[in-house]
Image (spheres, rainbow, N blue to C red):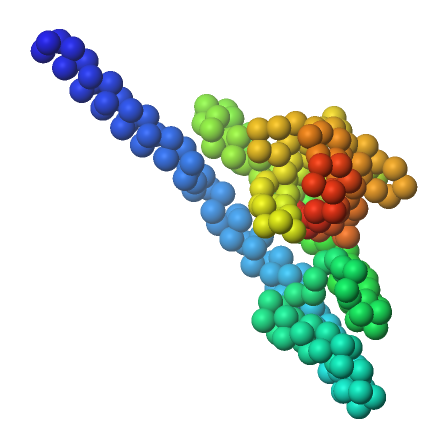
Length: 257
């Protein structure tokens, strides 16, 4: 009995140690990477991200002004449904700081036009942001090369892998159909949220499932338990709808960067 009890205590202690090691691995930080990352963050914010955020804020202000003008006009002409739709949009934008990524069957025609113009403008701002950010990413990646080589030579393989992963994240997005490759936070209109991964071999993963996707006419066709038709809104957002399964369920995705 004493032997069995001692064995159980040993196994329990091993479980605790393993859990600690797993937590340490999850929170592992490469000290040499910290100042390099801080320098990159400072430059990218000052040169690209802050100007982008300012431009989006200015665009939001213009959008709200257009909504208010449209609301006032609808009110003046006695169009209740339109006035209420513009009022609701104003309140939603003020609260969430964003514009819905898709329209539904009940969206007023005038509001659809304003949203479409807004989305197009945001898309251009996002593309310009990414274009201006890439040279900074390239420069940061080059700075990481000697660090990656040194860590490898010193046998610090886990740290080297962290640096290598960072380098991979700094690469420009693939061109053409593979532009979707990467990890995405997905939100479905039925309130289901998940992380999806799109791979270069034209497969995608969600939960523990794997499906396939193809590209045709600017749209991605996903095939698995449910089928989806999705489209990149810009480099970092996507929208789509379920075409088989719970037909009509919509999804919105934000790229994990």
